[in-house]
Amino acid sequence: MPQMEVKVRFKTKYLLGILAATAVLLIGMGIVVALLLTYTSYKTAVGIIPFFNMDLESTITSYYSSFILLISSCMLALITLNRKKVGDRYWRHWCSLALGFLFMSIDESASIHEFLANVPLHYLHISARINFSIAILGFIVTLLLFVFYLKFLLYLPASTRKRFIAAGIIYVSGAFGAELVGGIISLYSHNLDTGIYLAEVVIEESLEILGIVFFIKCLFLYIEENLVNTRAVFSLLAEQTNSNVLVKR
Image 1 (tube, rainbow, N blue to C red):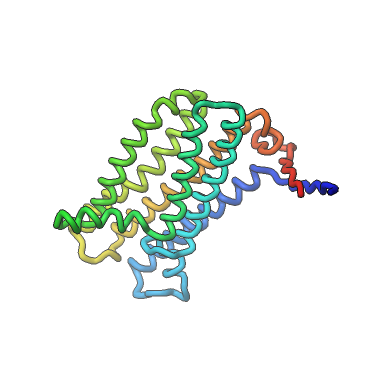
Image 2: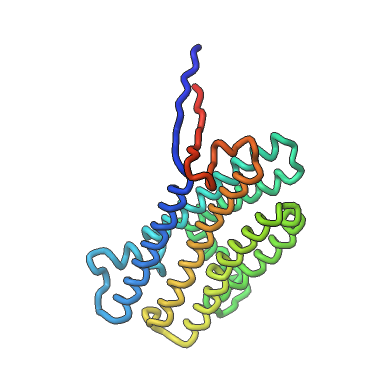
């Protein structure tokens, strides 16, 4: 049966530009919502508040976060296939990262972490704000993952290692650091529409989004610098180089 070759051409810097611009737009809308809730009596503002409120689930912002986590998972899966093909002993670490980001993508939409954080509080009969339980659980998991991936991090090229750690610090600072601050604020404020609490929420979600967008850039750079067989597919540094993906059927 004859094969048909289809060439899909794009520049990765444009993709990153779109992701970054969308992130900035959503963060801006989150700030607008925080200001509306703090200084006005609006509850919907023609749909702006429910669509872009960073303190709510099932919003445009949360779906965007889920989407960029899914992009990260797909890119990690591509790296896994390449690393396994060349016999890299750490290909399983890449695979577990891909699965982890896939879970994070699903969790961003389904809020699984909030359910898990409530389990110990329920069975141990502990009275605490969910912000604290999520933050503590998150820091514990982060520490365990750091220990598990330490050899993998040391194996990576120095430039990639520094970028991955930087992206991780940005994300964890928002996901758990700011979450902990939010728990402290909620202890002293019964009204979660206060300006200081909403400001914390915007900072938290913004750091998470920016951390993942930066991580996607790190993955593109890793592919460009280290995966020789895929340099033609992902070109970030050469402005005039287009990516080529071959689809055979």
